[in-house]
Image (cartoon, helix red, strand yellow):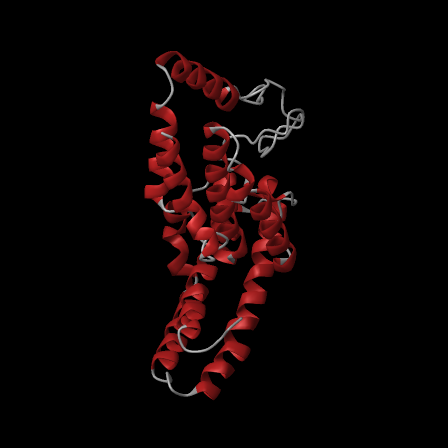
Length: 264
């Protein structure tokens, strides 16, 4: 058992040594293998105890608490990576608030540099080497939390993905709500289509591509982001949905440019 456990943990550890841990989720096979090993080595009674403990701590929305010591989480805080009393790492919540996860206010406008700094700090706290000598439950929780942080960072750093997520927090499914976008925004859509064609036809013309990035992509990104921010502040769902749809179209321009030039 000890040798097998060491082998599975080494799978995850190798990602760290190869430099892939900080930017990618641990492989699904590694996580699943470690989870199955940790689970089946327990006796049925311990398995049942863990099931009840996890269920109580994660699904009792009125009083979320630590799975290990039972300490109630800070009032008003649903996402808590470490217990404030025993410092034990908690399981990642499936639908935990991403803004709360990173400790930032829930606004569309955010500082990319600050988000990246918080992301790196969290990933350092969740580094697998910190949990090599802990319990199976803690190691599994560190993997789930790392995955949640990676997913959260990917969502919040993208203006479009962030807007889609904020609509979701308002109870709006973007894919369903955007169906009426085209009729009122034909001019913008035609502009995007023409620009896309220009990019496709100018793959080797770096000067033109950079000009498109400077004169089209960046000004539109700034304008649409400002509109999205204002809409979320006032709670104007229709305006927020329209801005999100524009960000989706603009993202395609950014992706096309990114294939040919460095747009960072």
